[in-house]
Image 1: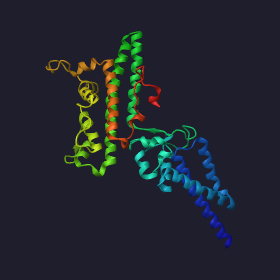
Image 2: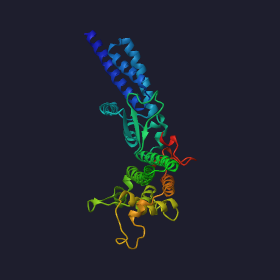
Image 3: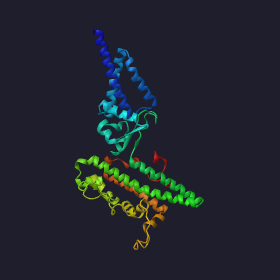
Length: 356
């Protein structure tokens, strides 16, 4: 009888050690501290628990409790073991190496001090995502925590297109052919489209963050503007670029008036003025004749043909400057745009660090 009770106590201790180690492993993985060898070592330790002697098990469990408590305190773990386990199951079930978790979800459900594992975490907007390298295979030693933001990817698209445009321009200047000329023109048009895609992506992401951070204090009108949806009619309420640039920062700071308008922000004035001339001609191209647009000597079709390098350059620099100004106005809780936004270098291109 005593022997059975002793066996049950050992079995119970092994079960508690197993559960504690699973929690420790999950939090450790979610902190992106593992490399590939560490992942394998943890799995071995977990598999060895059933074979530990009673004395070894007591030592192991005591040390594990201390390490687990220290890890949870360090990262501010606030989810239960099942929450962490569920996240890892999601990761193991997906085909890619990285599991992308939104910052807001991690803050609300998993950790209160994740910036200890990833200092950049504090500078991400609520919609920013942290990449969990589940098996430690994409990097070594937990020295780099993957992260991504939608608008950062749109910025990189623009930067890569612009660099390609610069290369195409050099090729055209060195040896002009019909193909080199058309390649430069095509890349210029693609770059201009990407400028407006970046601006729209940034504003739409800001809209989501405002709703997340201020949901309880937003008026119905503000919610309608941010969601681009009319609750009364049950229909979309599409906003133009100018309206978003005026109203989204205003709602974010709870101001009475738009903080950035054409009269105090030349970049905003240029981009809003260029929307009709450039964006619509490139995103919604159509044929117009002077007979159809008698008052317009430069109809949409003509603007499609007349895009030039310098106007693209100015527009792109203005978009970068405008996003920086919006970021400064709305404040740090909406993220630091400077972690992903870069200026062109002295050669007029985006340097390699703009894409890291």
